[in-house]
Amino acid sequence: MDNLKRNLPPLTSLLAFEAAARLGSFSDAARELNVTREAVSRQIRALETHLGLSLFARGANATQLQPTGQRYYETLSAAFGAVARETQALRGGQADPAPVEPLDPAEDQPLILVVDDLPGNIRRLYDVLRGQYQVVAQTDPMVALGWLLNGGRPDLIMLDVRMAGMDGYALCRRIRSEPGFDRVPILFLTSLDSTDDETEGFAAGANDYIARPFVPAILLARIQAQIDLRRTTAMLEDLLQRRADRLERMEAALRGIQSQIAELDG
Image (cartoon, rainbow, N blue to C red; front, side, top):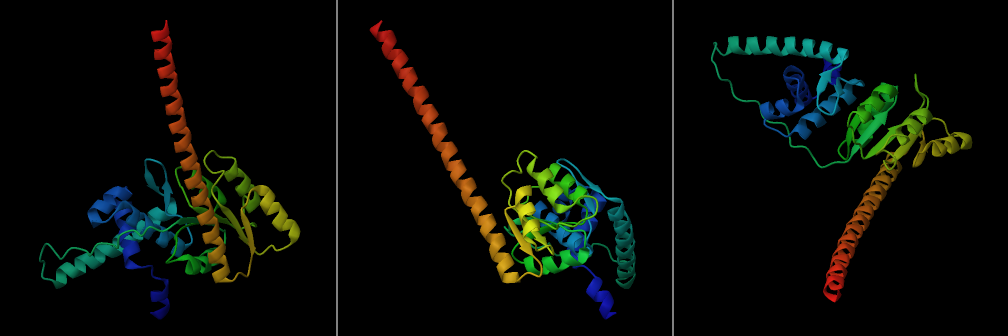
């Protein structure tokens, strides 16, 4: 029983997943559970990290269960149904049971995409990141790439190097080639620690390269440094753009005044 309990995901994550899978929408699940869509998404990401696999194929306008997610939902739905029927029997068939307590609201935490084909590595990393970051974990590089191309917008991406199908270097180059991902911080976390490996990582487009075994405090500091740098850069770019727009409007106004003066002189 103790081993079974250790393998059980948090109930809030199971509730969020069951509602999203049944209703076919994170938004509808959020309305049913009386929470934000972000809270549902965060709980499902936590469940996917716990399982070490992706349950949904997320798109810009749709959320569809993966085959593994469908099987998990069918098992979970049957279990929930059995609990509900037994509860109703114990309560003497009374209707309108007490409502489920809502999930905690989503926290304003940076989102990190972790890509590693070893679920054990993901779980250890999740233990370090949880509480400070939201985590989306993928064991398949192609699924991770699909998540990004379908609207995923992480604040930072962490990649392993040796992975089946597509290694981390190739995945990094592929991500960098996509519009909108040229500025997202990418960090390699790998057991490869030679100078050549590190050089290849930076050449592929990485912002940082960390070899295992890592020191959690140092890893967290380097992650935060990359996120802070990206946010500062984005703020400066936005400031410069707003100033450029203001200058353009001023120049347009000046041209209009000059045109009016020219007409008066004529």
